Picture 1 (tube, one colour):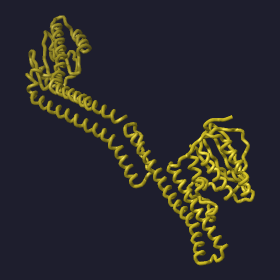
Picture 2: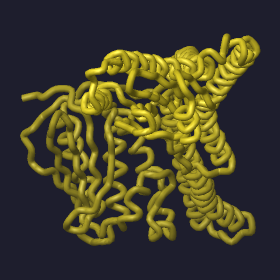
Picture 3: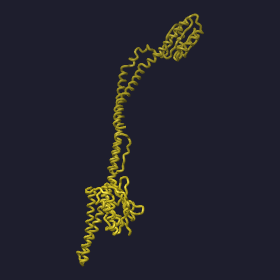
Picture 4: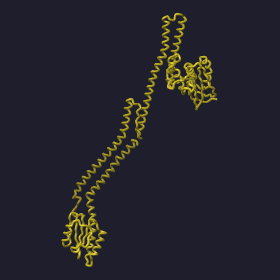
Length: 486
């Protein structure tokens, strides 16, 4: 339930609950008042009404029995009928012939009153507490009717006023008003507390989350499942925490890469500079005494300067590619023209330098959109790496390509020893070289594969490395196909 729905329901309940409880309180108060002022009187009056009917029946019997022909058997039969039709537990009816009890119905609760009535001559009525006794006389019989639960309605001339009706009613009204106000207050407090809790609890969770993030616990996630307005906020917070963690991880990785970059640049610049310094000192101190030696020294210094110039040029190229400022000259060309013709052109030259390049036969020919010059730079970097790092006499590279699902997949596999699995993902990092090549800087400066990756990404493609099943290293380049060509 959303907070908006809770507010709506709370407002409705703020009206309905006090009204219902107030009505219930008023009804209860009315029933209590009615019970106090009228209930007992009305109950007693109902009982007196019943007693009046019994009294009238006894009077009828008295007239019936005031006949010389009436026998005791008739009296007994009439009393049985009275017991069946008119008798109640509070009524006793006795018929005497002189001092002899002919028949009776019910139980006498006050024997003294009965004894007094029997001694008195004539018809009399007696009232003691709630016991009412009356006597009737006929020619032969004396009839005594007793009601042990009689309400003396003559005693209360005005019972409502005798019980301080107005004073009591005013007090009850005050109590009812206080109860209604209390109900409104309690209902407001309960609903307000419920609503406040539904807002403060998720706010406390968010606050706790912010403290956790501030303390550096970027893995902290808010556990919130209620379907309300705070659920998307909690999800956004968790997403923010994940993004912050990813940013921090990337930042740490960038920092590590920066340190490695500085170390790589320092290494690849310091090595030729050290050599240049050594040869210049040799020339300065006259170690190279003959013209031939001085010429050799100058040639070495020049080569080292060329190496420095190449490193700086590659750094500049990588910087341009990394910032997206390098101006690619994208043209549409075919795979056979881009790869087959280029490999046919350089095969002989590389074979003379100890690297055999084999192109697997393929009839597929597709149109690609690339910068041919930069793509050939990528191929040259890969072939040069194979020539430098494959530790065999019969160095060989096999080039093959295929088209799968509108993607051009180019594979370049050497016959070397491959790369350890943990180092595969680092091959395309700037200045990364296998540990074995670090001791021989002349084999490379660790810029070639990093530059190749940026170039391929500039063509909207990907480049990755994996170890071949035969033990060599495979570089896979994937480019989008523009169209197929027959």
